[in-house]
Length: 292
Ligand SMILES: NC(=O)c1ccc[n+]([C@@H]2O[C@H](COP(=O)([O-])OP(=O)(O)OC[C@H]3O[C@@H](n4cnc5c(N)ncnc54)[C@H](O)[C@@H]3O)[C@@H](O)[C@H]2O)c1
Image (tube, rainbow, N blue to C red; front, side, top):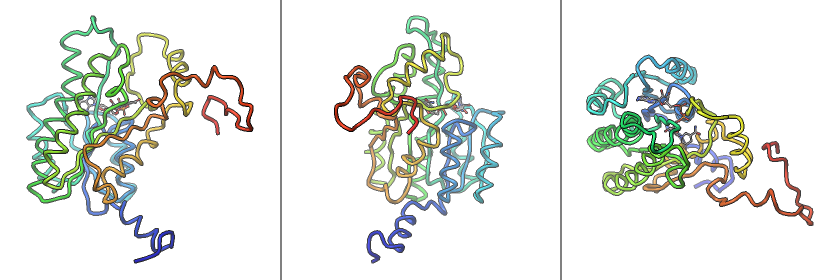
């Protein structure tokens, strides 16, 4: 055994994060977090199956980035809101790509609406994509993982909104909270089969989600940044380390867990530091815009 910190020790450690020989399915892979997750998995050595809405413009770009890293990328378009089609979709993916080792349930949708203005159409659209699709896709993929005898890894991308509510997102908040408990339930049901299930809860990330803002987006985002202890939104790439831990051998004992990647938002009830007197010690507050 090599000594910790020695070059050999470091290469052993790198091996524990290596995904060579594994195949990962990432939903919502055309842009945003989904693209960052797919590219990170490819960097770690995995081959990819990329899915998003039929005709989603960015899928080809994500596939090109994965192939540019020397990994295979199968593009399999699917509207995840078509719940009844998801078992067939999982079967097709397995037939074309072989056994899946990793499933990243990342696709999601949101709409900013007051609770009393949410129509049944909007409510069920958010639930179908954010909750129902996660359940029915996972149901079939997990069966395949068990039948194929692989050490499966399932990661559900939730949100800090699974834990603390935000106005205007009743359907979104409820869908993400539901996925959190679904994650725990599947984790305990799948544990005897060697398949782990965890959730990754991002905070505010620079992606196109919530495209339509029915109010002053700039003012809202400035106020939000001031609430974030790290002082800025995350780049999608800053959520990929947590994903890699959840899917690699080094993370094998993590199941039914949640990793929050939110720059400290949930740790901070109220941004009191902005109102406190200046430090008398040598510690100085850095600027709030995130510059180090
Ligand atoms: N951006 C954030 O600040 C943030 C914060 C917390 C959680 N999240 C979660 O992260 C995940 C990714 O979000 P993002 O910010 O990258 O958003 P995004 O809108 O940039 O990407 C979401 C992707 O999901 C796809 N998608 C939506 N509906 C679909 C459907 N019916 N069938 C197939 N694909 C569909 C979209 O086409 C898109 O490519 C979501 O689950 C979201 O809720 C995002």
